[in-house]
Image 1 (cartoon, rainbow, N blue to C red):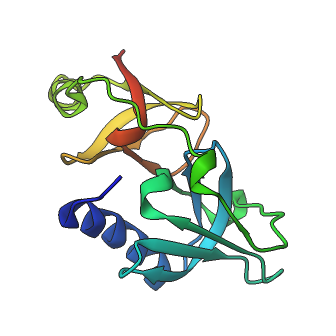
Image 2: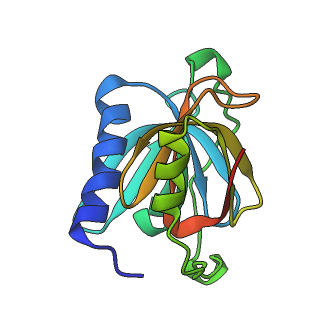
Length: 164
C-alpha cells in the first residue's frame, strides 16, 4: 500500500509526540501483535518506525502501513517483555479491508450526538470510548472501557464501527 504524504504526516506527527515527550506507547500492528515501547527512531524516508526498550535494548521495526492503533497510557500501565530485535515480514500481513464504508461520517455523527462508539479492527480487537478527535485517516478515542489514556485508530484497519 502506498501512503499519501498527508497520511504519513499524520502518523509522523502522532509518533513524534511520543518520541519528544519520552512517553511510552502501545502500538498494535496488522498481525495482531502489540508492543509497549518507546519511540526510538522515525525514518520518514522509508516510512518506518523503530521502537525500543531502554532497559533490555530490544527493538521492533515496522512500516507505517502496518500500524493499526497507537495507545498512550501511564508509564505504570506499560509492561514490556521484548528482549530482541524483531520485524514482521510483509507477506505475513493481512490484506487491508476494503469495506467502502465512510467511517469518518459514522464517527462524526456519534461525536455530534455525544454517543460512544465501539470500533472493531482487523486484529480482532474492539475499542469502546468517546470520540476525542477525528480526521480523514483516524479517530481518537478517550474514556475507554477497561483502559486509561487515549487511543488513535487508523481507518484503513477498521472493520466495523458501532454507535452505542
